[in-house]
Length: 159
Ligand SMILES: [Cu+2]
Image 1 (cartoon, rainbow, N blue to C red):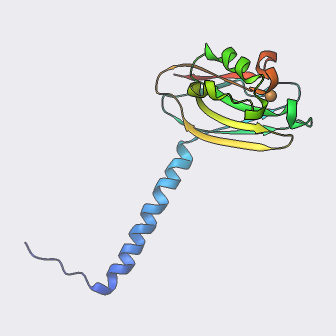
Image 2 (tube, rainbow, N blue to C red):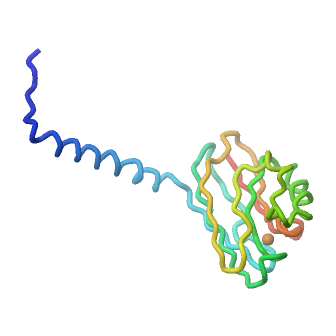
Image 3 (cartoon, rainbow, N blue to C red):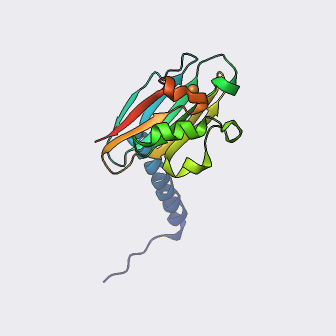
């Protein structure tokens, strides 16, 4: 085989170009592939988005905006995605006395798939995660002071 001769002066430029192309590809692709979800939480104990539909393993970016005005202590809002419908009430009950831990009880941490910590008024939080690979319904709740029992909840549906 005839050896190819590459002028050495071209090598750094080629390497730089290759690096630039490689660096730009993944970010361009991931921006397109992420499902963007913006949820607002308010003092009326409601999420404005109560259903998110995703494909198994889909990358999801959730941004939670607390548009309320009441104090964080008692009327802050968080977003907790759980591994099964059966755990939603249990998690909320365990979170009730758990103000010191930001209403995220360690005893229930194994059921949390993704979460955004407690936000005060006008605060914004976000999380990027992968949807479960198993099709099904995965509840999300605000675990602050029994808010989910008053209706502050929704469902991630993987199908
Ligand atoms: Cu809340």
